[in-house]
Image (cartoon, rainbow, N blue to C red; front, top):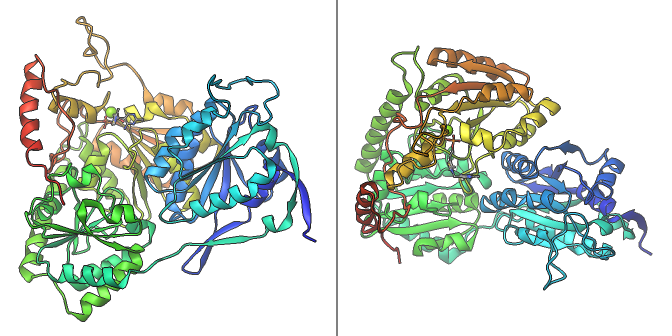
Amino acid sequence: MTSTTRLTVAQALVRFLSAQYTERDGVRHRLIGATWGIFGHGNVAGIGQALVEYGDVMPYHQGRNEQAMVHAAVGYARQSGRLSTHAVTTSIGPGATNLVTGAALATVNHLPVLLLPGDVFATRPADPVLQQLEVPYAGDISVNDCLRPVSKYFDRITRPEALIPSALNAMRVLTDPVETGAVTLALPQDVQAEAYDWPDDLFAERIWATRRPGADPTELAEAVRAIRDARRPLVVAGGGVHHSRAEEALAEFAEVTRVPVASTQAGKGSLRHDHPQDVGGVGHTGTATADELARTADLVIGVGTRYTDFTTASGTLFANPDVRFLNLNIAPFDGHKLAGTPLIADARSGLMELTAALDMHAYRVPASYVTEYTEDKERWEQRVDACYEADEPDVRPTQPQVLGALDAIVDESDVIINAAGSLPGDLHKLWRARSRDQYHLEYGYSCMGYEVPAAIGVQMAAPDRPVWALVGDGTYLMMPTEIVTAVQEGIAIKVLLVQNHGYASIGGLSEETGAERFGTAYRHRADDGTFTGTPLPVDLAANAASLGMRVLRAKTVSDLREALAQARTADTPTCVYVETQTADTVSGAPPAQAWWDVPVAETATRPSAVKARELYERHVSTRRRHL
Ligand SMILES: Cc1ncc(C[n+]2csc(CCOP(=O)(O)OP(=O)(O)O)c2C)c(N)n1
Ligand SMILES: [Mg+2]
């Protein structure tokens, strides 16, 4: 007879989660390293009680905001190479719907996170319970249904025994390299507390091995033929290179073939910045080197990329009339994009197979091509140096000079995190990634507010590395809440807070698209009713200090260098606050090297919009469909 143990659903789930492992390349990791939680009536007595009961096997972290807890879990998962993540428990209603943005971010970026929102009573004894949405035409809808489209697996556990198949499916999806993203198990609050006789086998240690599928022989032969025919091939390395830990395999591919490697935001760092074949970021925020190669490439070899509009310059970048695409991707959905030749495989396996086959044929790109991109890269490096340098170290820095100051004090061990604003573009163009996981840009969802909580998660996965959250003032205001969490847990994250009094990025975009910077600066209302008065007297440094951070204020580039060096070795959460030249002055970074499609008003009375529309139509006319 199968032996059983009587536990509540919440207790069974927590015990089950503590026994799940992943394994890749012979190394084992705990799948769910900890659980984040904010308690309300929808989870306090269920999951909350279970976390006390099993505190010895399931660590708990307290967050301030449910969305931020998901960001922390995502940061942890990414830093752990997707082999380990966290669970997040919430109450019902607002606590649960606060998860939606975090879930979407996880799913868009293919990063695993387990969400455990409380749900309304399954037995419906006294509807509506506090915070319940009543839907007159459907009895089985709760606000948690908002999580369905942003989850890669969703279930509502309305009976105890349903947890068994559901929990197993949740683990399958979390650990599947194609499917992974946010996984949601909605837990009705009465069911959480209900007891059941669970088969003990449910609680046995279970290993979810990460597969590395190799290429189909026919697809591989086709891919090798395509590369051998190419004279100007270019690799576009995406986040899949990192997810598969394929950086070394990519370096070997590049060294054998001399094919240059450009990278997306998620793929940057696939090669070190000083690798001879690394040509930097590609697309709207790319380097001149990479974008020129992209314009003239006859074969684009996408490795683990989704080809977002930033990468393709909204369909205008790959301009060679004969260009073809070869897409090495573990997901067929992405492998078939741009009518490319699919090579459906794990990035590392696929690259190793390609390198072996091409080496056999002694394939190498023409020497003139190597000379061309090497010289181009050198020229771009000089531009980076020029905008990093501060001629007058005693004046307020530009944003690139802030990055130059950071660049001067970091080494391979530092991790820099960013997601939104004008920093992503500057970083993609300028940052010199010194290790494969130094550059942590969340640009799939580009979610303001990701940086601070994500830094906590990254630091949890990499306790000995300096971890920097780079945030603009707008982003800071969106979600400074988890500073309190860092203080509580003694996690010495570093926050580099760049004050420019508003949305420099969207302000610039607004101006280019005929919207005249409307509503993008943090300024007082002027006499004409617009927000164009003086900057707001808001002191974000004092705000960070009030939440418990040590704050170092830097006025000039020389102050900044000193403050950054101090923060880097600090053992408590530390914020470096710097005010840059304001939002409406030029950032100092090289301009965009390629277009990005943001539709401009087709009809308007204001001359700025009319002019912007003319330019817009010229750009649109250069768009291609790759068929
Ligand atoms: C949650 C969220 N809301 C809105 C946006 C759109 N958005 C992108 S950048 C940005 C402004 C960012 O301001 P700040 O952090 O100060 O950076 P700056 O542009 O000044 O560099 C906005 C509103 C977003 N990316 N995320
Ligand atoms: Mg700003």
